[in-house]
Each structure stands twice: as structure tokens, then as C-alpha cells.
Image 1 (cartoon, rainbow, N blue to C red):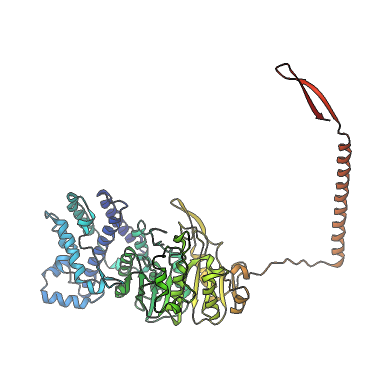
Image 2 (image 1 turned 180 degrees about the vertical axis):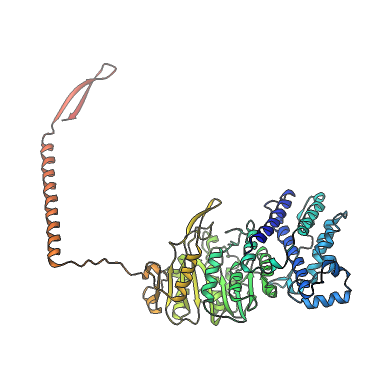
Length: 552
């Protein structure tokens, strides 16, 4: 990763945030929209110019302005779907020259609006009701900046910052590590662990990398579908796509959060996966599943607890409910509806959505792997009895900074008819402070230890075991590695004479202790015999006589 360019891009993000804070948007919802959409415009603008110059070095900004309409159309056709199409009057440099217009903010947002319309077919996200969510908000400045006197000021500040920094071939040649770091930096204040009603957990990169490396292993997948039914901003999907190769994977996702879906779209664009944007769906995966096709790989960090009592009964009436939710639908508790185990629906949906030879990895509360009854156990029994389990990795506590829930990663492999790997990684990692919270961070070496142990199916003392499906059945379908670890017994080789000598020493010691105890009993008995009863008279401060009894 080029640190110079990393600092440059992060500096642009910081400067944009400063503009929005000055406009009174610090920490507000509108700030994240302005930041992500301004940055997206910058990225698409410079990516377009980059792709144009790849076709012909003479395709500079000035030459594009002078190009005939016919030649420009040919240019767009040659660029194809590698990036969004922009017209000369939509480029940042053109807007930069117009910034002194009386209503520049309208010019700015009209430009973004037209770019969204022109690229609607490829770059729109769809809801489960087929409503298109475009690249840019129609009234981005107007609806975000309530003070009309500040709209021009904000729009001018944005365009000046976007024009100042140039993204060139050095940046666009960077790989996944660069853009994933950039993306995480950009959204770190807007997609925190546990944020929002739908628990939009930001999956740590260490967890995402472990999942991707274990799932792919030594395989060389080609033309595969990868899917996340609760995608969030797409960390798991991006890591898996990068591991497989962005040209070898098509991404599918669904998430109920509009914010998450927009962030995922940005993530896909940054990482060269814009061909998959039309597969992003915003909506309720459980009751409105828009991806009925079977998947090669599924990754997910679903919400664990959530009140879904309003539509719980609807789940049971779905046409495919008996197959899709074979273990059952959680009942509505009399109290604490917000603790309904919605993850149980997601893990069943994932099993149902896999191809006959598909693989999946799901982040779940560790309690899932040992529950002795209920839906959790029924799911585990299904995985074991049907021989579609690869293993489990129990992660360290606080691997997510703001949730105290211990998590494990369940690996499903419908092809695995052999041994299952169970890893207890709870003792790995280093505790660090992150704000007010404590977080556990895994080192690269620890990540590699987990991955290699799992792939090679190694048994490592107090860390991992390999067990058969029959072994798991005998342990009441428990998937906790600790329940399979051998009990340690220390053996010492000694002769018969040495044994007799040790036993004699022990007996002598015991005899001595018993003698001391007997002597102490006698002393206490004799002292008790000397205790007598008597009374005495004392005077208090009021000179009155008081009778007091005492033992002596």
C-alpha cells in the first residue's frame, strides 16, 4: 500500500468533514450523505478520465471538451461498464469553473442528479419492491443544508476540494487493501458496531479475512456467486470477492437498511465490482427474499437479537417456510421482545440458499454452539445428521468493540463428509482500548494460525480438535472445542522402593499432624475447665451503682 496516496486521500476525507462540520452538520445524518456522495462523485470523475486516457493518451480534459458529439459517444462505448459515464459538462473541472454562479449549489446538485439518471441502469440499487435508489440524491445540497445562505458556500467548498486532489493511475492501480482501508476510514463515524435499530455491525477485517481464507483455501473458484443476506456495508463480501478475484465472482446481497445498501454500493465501486450493483437489494431478506437462486458461497454477520414480532407470523405462512425454516421460527416472548433470536432465521435461510456443493460462514453468538435444546440445537443436529459441517472457530471476547457477546464462526460445507474442525481461539489476541470500549485485536500471525489449523485439520493441544460426526452426536451435538479436549493426567515413573519410601514419609507426616492436633485438643479442654462465674459492682458517671456479671 502506498502510504503517500493513503494520506492524500484520507486528507481529502478529513477536509470534507471539516466543511460539513462548519456548516453545522457534524455528526448528523446529512453529513454522511454529503461525504460519501461527494467522494463518490470525485472517484467516478477521476476514474472516467483515467479510463479515457487508457484508451488514448490524448484524451485530456481539454480535448474531451473539444470532441464532437459523435466521437464522444464512441468514447463512451469503448469505456463500457468499467466506470460511470460522464459528459464534459458533468466533469469536476467544468463545475470548478462555474463556482461563482449565483446559484452554484443548484448547478452542483443538478449535475449529480443528471449523472444518476444517465447511469441508472447499471449503478442503481433496488428495493424489494423494485424502486430504484440512484447514485446521488436529487436535492443533495438543498435537503441537507437547511440554511439557504450556506448552500453556495458548502457547494463551492466541496468542488474546490475535489478539484485540488487528483486520483491517477497510481491510486487506481492499488488493490483491495488500499480501498478497504480507505472505505473503513471514510465511514468509521457512520457505521459503528451496534449502531442503529438493525445492529449494523461493522465486521472487523481480521474476522472477514479469516472467513475468506478458510472458505476459499487452496481452491481456484471460477464464475461463482457470493452472497450475504444481511450485508451491511459489505466487509465480508469484499474480502471474499478479493480472495476469489473480482473478475471471477458475482456479488449478491440484501439488507433492510438503506444506509448500508448505499455504503455497499460505494464499496463495490471502489473495488471494481460495479458489475454486481444491480444485485444489491434493500429490503427484508426473511419475508421478501429477492435472491432465490442457489449460491456457491455465503458469508454473513446477521443481527443476533431483534424484535420481529410484527411480522413473525408472516414468516410461517411463506410458501417455502417448511423447507427454508426447517428448525422453526422463534416464538414471541411475553417480555423482552427485542431479544428475539433473529439470527436463527438467518442461519436457516443460509443453509437453504446454498448449492448442493456450496459453502458458508456465519458469525453467531457462541451460545449457539452448545445450546441443549430449542432451534439452535435442531439446526446443529441438521448440519451433523446431513453431514454438511466444516467446523467452528470460537473467537476471543470483545472481537467486536462494543458488544459483550462472545461470537463463534460457523463454517458450513455441504461437501464435507469427513472430520470436522473445532477451534478455541478465545485466548488469542491483544486487548486494546478503542474509545470507551475494550477491543481484542488479532495479530497477522494469530490469524494465520487459525486459518492454517482449520484448513489442515490439525489437532493442537488446548487449541483445536478434529472430530467425526459420530463424535459430535455422542456429545449431544455440541460444537465447543473444549468439550473434546483430552483430560491431562501427569504420569511419573518410579520404582517400588521409591513408592514405599514416599508412602512412609506421607504416613509419618500424617501421624505427626494427628499428634499435634490431639495435644491442641487437650490444651483447649484444660483451659475451659478454669473458666469461673462471678459478679462485680461498678459505678457509672451518674454515681449510681451497676451490677455487672463476667466470666473469668
